[in-house]
Amino acid sequence: MNFNEYPIDSLMYITNRPEIVFTHGKGSWIYDNNGKRYLDFIQGWAVNSLGHCNDGMIEALNSQAKLLINPSPAFYNEPMAKLAGLLTQHSCFDKVFFANSGAEANEGAIKLARKWGRKFKDGAFEIITFDHSFHGRTLATMSASGKPGWDTIYAPQVPGFPKAELNDIASVEKLINAKTVAVMLEPIQGEGGVIPATREFMQQLRELTKKHNILLIVDEVQSGCGRAGTLFAYQLSGIEPDIMTLGKGIGGGVPLAALLSKAEIAVFEAGDQGGTYNGNPLMTAVGYSVISQLTAPGFLEGVRSRGDYLRAKLLELSEERGFKGERGEGLLRALLLGKDIGNQIVEKAREMQPDGVLLNAARPNLLRFMPALNVTTEEIDQMLAMLRSVLDSL
Ligand SMILES: *Cc1c(COP(=O)(O)O)cnc(C)c1O
Image (tube, rainbow, N blue to C red):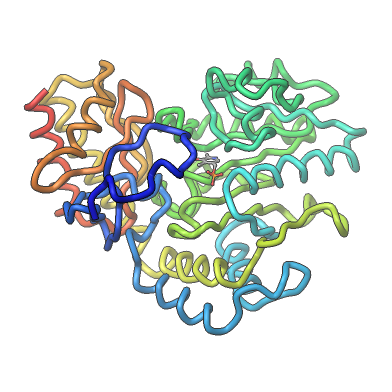
């Protein structure tokens, strides 16, 4: 169908979108209404951990759709229990609450920490978060985020989220007072431009929060579920947080998220937390297929080796073009361009003929790469060849 034949005008404006309509995809490739194909290094924003239309996910979706779609969150269902068991088996956490988006999981983490503060810390409620962090688009998670300008768009903000500097432990310590209940961070800032918290900083944070008897919350909506080359990014720093949130990759593309905590932190009482779709069997069945595939023998080793491959190739490209290097973990990486040409590259890469490539500039001066975790080295080479030809044309 022609672009003009779609009732695009009926959609509420929220952002500038290119004049194409995506129709289908498989693995690392996605196709538009003109039949043009694109090598996808965005993957639904680090969401499609197994690429487009993964066979295992399709099978889980189909077979669960015939069995049970939603018995209500007031009852147990089988996929919900199986996925919770898989997540606690493969992490340091004991309890899981399912949600439908990363923001909603983070809202749950904020509520759980405040509840814990009410119960055990004399009503402490402040959660220290970080400049340039991103935690979602609900009012509380926007307030928790350190995105420039977000303090005023929908003012007044939800109070109680003082901001520290990532990788600067003194800036965190300075903000701790009797009202502090937790510190919350992304182990790798994603939207902020793929900025990893150092191993040393994570360990300092764990020590500091223990010393003050406050909670450590990791927002692994982007860094979790294999993206960083380990199942969860906190595992890279050898610490155990109290609370973790997951989103994006856990559903491999379907709306699924999770809030996890240690047993002693799980203090919700009847009626404190819930949601109509939370833990529905259709989505948790897909999540079970995704996490089973990610934890299958050899899978994460493969992510790490392809991450190393991408890293080496990006460094080579950086050297060749006089860029400023690269950073990241696993298959969440950024190429530092040193100048604000990111958006120009993204547009040209998408418009290339005959095939395009989907890239993202999380900041104007860098490109972020978040391919499917099962991307092949040949596809990485293809992406780099296409990127080189875009750079030649600038
Ligand atoms: C994307 C993201 C969120 C928000 O997730 P949604 O599913 O869009 O609500 C929260 N935290 C981090 C770190 C993210 O990358």
